Image 1: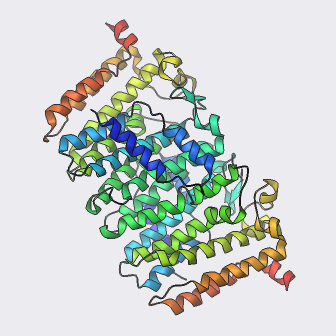
Image 2 (image 1 turned 135 degrees about the vertical axis):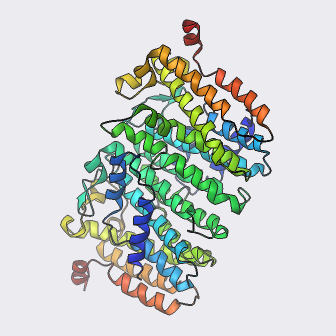
Image 3 (image 1 turned 30 degrees about the vertical axis):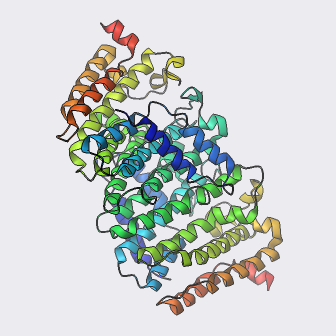
Length: 289
Length: 289
């Protein structure tokens, strides 16, 4: 699962295309702060890997799709960190956007990143016109209502939540969008790729829950113990650490088993195996063994 | 300048297309609260009027464009009302979204409306594929960086601002997007329509500044005197009431004079004259006369 240099270049180009001396400089700086340096870039790398496996005939469309997904992810982090949600002071080892630029610019930076995530799809020479509507709707479904990541976050404001539905929306939805967008960027049918992303997303969410209870904040670059402190649904809280580890393994197996037939299926399967082995926090795996 | 029933129907369809029993119900309710009942729907009516003047050959595309513009406007109101910005308790005569549903759902409702504004453009049978990229980019430019309404709002976080640039971005940009999207929805070249929207947007912003200093809050359904209280740039503050009224007249004349040649030019000019006469607050016009 590679493509990282292309993804960084696509994100740089996405922001550069919006930067003008005549725009508000602090918002421009806040956008760069939110996007660079990145985290693991898991979603866009997944998007790119699926496009490559489908035989990316139009690399610019795969770049645009990957950048779009990552920009949505960055937007969600900026807004999730706001004082009214997680009130996180750090993110990726540096101050969160609202700590660095204030709450107003953090709200606006999140908004702007959502807009940019759609803008990149429609830039000249980005997507063939006959693929644009499909890509746009895959991204909007992954983010919007009723089952996208914004809906997932909104479940935290409801009195009653089913853990699987919450995690599917909060994380699985954008992973599913990543795999589906990778396929759609090549002109392939995106639907058979939904399950791979959805299962991987659930797996990453469970892994994130585990890190939240079992790691220290220096290790992962953001505060830990937040789920319990904020009373949020959590696999580790609901199933215990051993149960959550078991669930994680099952989800990874289901994800890899769901990879549809495609020219690069063997290589993608291998890449997924390597990638998902990194999911289990080392210390936890040692303790569980 | 009509099209109101079509616009309301398009907005209803936009939200209904996202509503499922399996989605978070409070966010769904917050979205409806933000969109209905509407204000004057000036931007989507303007969009529709331009499409009609260009000879709307594809009404569904004009509906989608108009709905997209209005959803962006609604999103901006929800976020502008947040405690970190205007901290407005009322909007359109009822509680602001964050007062009714809490700050977290207000952030998410704004995010979701931005996503929905793009989603409606790509729905089946909405826009012909060869018009989608143009429409998407017109909307994203009207909202994003460096000169869209998000950038306009961000100028309030900068130490120094030029009033005309600020107002052009904060209001003019989405009006320009409205006129340009109306043209693009019919397959016409959008660029000649930019000036009409930009000038009208400035005119509405000046009128809004005037209402903020000269009307009471019951009359306009939201708190007044906010610009001065928040130290925001304002035409009425900078030019005085008489100067601002003069500027408003000049902007309206420039707007109407800029209408490009098109099949429905005469009817559009007439509609613009009627519409813009409502801009000057009656009490002010009486006092100024």
